[in-house]
Amino acid sequence: MNRRGLLPVLLVFSALLAACGAPDARPVGGSARAADTSTALDPDRAVRRVVKLFGSRMQTVSLLVPDSLAASRVQEAYGTLVTPDLLSDWMARPAAAPGRRVSSPWPDRIEVQSVTPSGSDEYLVTGSLIYESSASGQSVSRAAAQPVRLHLRRGGDGGWRISMYEQTTAHANAS
Image (tube, rainbow, N blue to C red; front, top):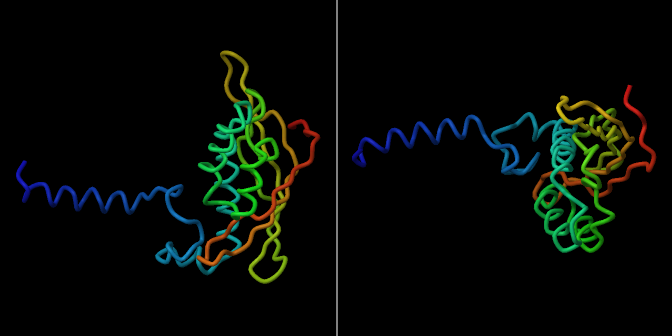
């Protein structure tokens, strides 16, 4: 195909990629998402989106590996979602970071119960961290739920970042 024939194909491909988007590759609720005015105007929705993305990344952070590898994975998975202070703390002490501590059950997602303003450009989120498991040859199923609390702050770039994450130590059995 010559250059003239390739240009329209590339333009169509670029338009399709832009329309589909890759949510993990863009800042969440930040100024770079100006085209998504509903997120920019609705902090509740943007905060929920950050928490959902954070929860989905937990299963990719193995804390069973040496600290140097765990710290690297923490940075890759959470670097754009948490404040620099929280990221620095977790990288210095990977065992304190949320992630996959055993092969099964594993953290799958966070189900948000409430999003409450807690100051200027700050929100408190409560929810449940959902763990899933699978027995050999069986489908994946909900294994447990654990209460979690997160604080989120709007950063200088306008995006929302998690500044505090805590969970209780006891697992509640799934019903």
